[in-house]
Image (cartoon, rainbow, N blue to C red; front, side, top):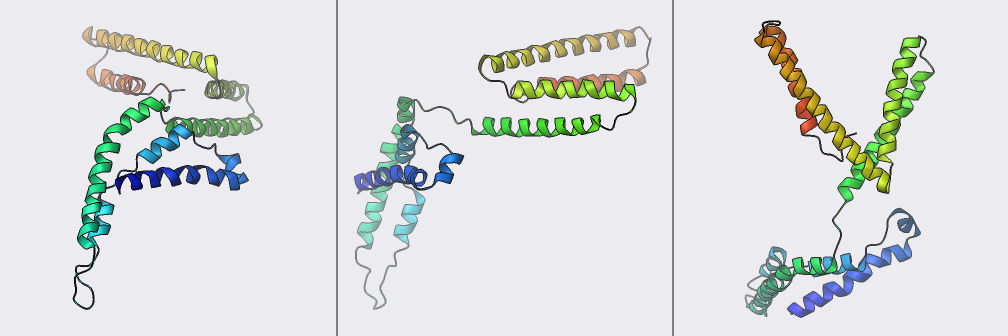
Length: 227
């Protein structure tokens, strides 16, 4: 029974994974079919548990005429056997199978994060382009140009590929380290001014809090989110 349960899952999961792509051109244009390694790992991950046992225990004890329900004990026994076998066999070998198949890490979250950030930056850049048509003074035009250039730089880094993207990540990492170094120098300068009584504690406190806030944001910002 355990072998039948394992083989049955492996037998239907492959058609279930690929037939939708065969009969749905719209799905083929929107998604890529999973690799056979991914499908095999998903099929091997079909350990049985509480649902199987609950289904077996849901069989009534007695029939309507008061007689015992035939085969109830053997169904419960086989269900427990399938549960223990699949948990022991499939559960203890799933990790080794995944390593053997060399399945890549799930990058869905990173891809969605990148898509969202690109869309957001593109929308922000488009809104700045709209403002360029309404700016009047030279000062406003210059200030807007600086912000537009920053957004264009962010968009270029987000859409970069290969070595260009790696270089952008290295540049962001170095930029963050340099900013942290500069913030620490600012903090030491404020501390010296306080010790020399050039500024009071009331003046020092809000400036110190501002530096602490900026440093905390830089120190806790993941590399793939920065920029």
